[in-house]
Length: 297
Ligand SMILES: [Zn+2]
Image 1 (cartoon, rainbow, N blue to C red):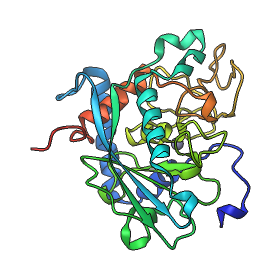
Image 2: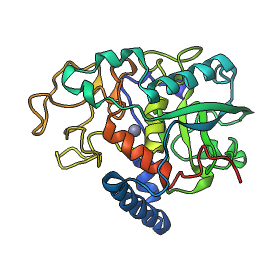
Image 3: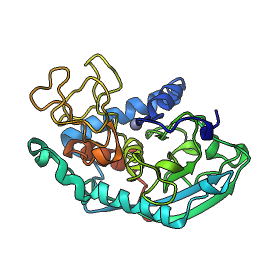
Image 4: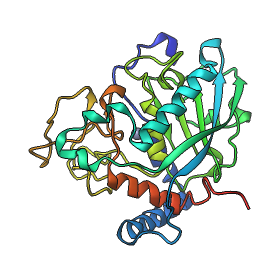
């Protein structure tokens, strides 16, 4: 599908669950995910053996993959995305004031920040990419990652079918580890387009990269869980700009925490991670992502 011929997406979609399902067919990934969830449960109860204190700075490389000029986004657009990540992950985003009173005490500072290490620019013959990871290898029209145990790799490119982005959870193959963001949902300048022009697609996807699940648990029967205790259970994703409260399953009176970064609302409607989500991300930084932000030895 050529994205220039398809309508602009009316709501958020993320390919992370699809990629997760595909990788689960590999025994090695299955075992890694089981081990990581056990480690995370222990961390949530007891803390971790190498638990980080203070701020973790994640060296970040942005791979710009483009066929025509518009997807060859500017350095300013890239920096605008890094700036958003730094605000959102520290809870210093001004719109955090929109969190309903009942949940203000749950707003978390992830103690993670991002430092742009380098930018690669690759002209490709591929008109648009999908969740097939082809943007992640030079051999398939993209660019190889920097070592994934040390760097957060972000690819930005043309994506087909209204897909805004996707991530790979910890425990997957290093050669495809990182996040992918459609250039029109990347940063706050240049080609970034409303309602996805506040950089929140990357905030959501980096949340997955640090082992957060969707807040509704990727099921639609009220049995899903994101394995985080301070986020209410909810039936399904929320889209657009919901009004508080939106009740589902048994979460009355406050309802869904739709303003969480791990829901599917528009960029200007999401504004928080919770303390429980911070603990899950810190578990990822203590376990499967233990080398990230550490000095090389
Ligand atoms: Zn997602």
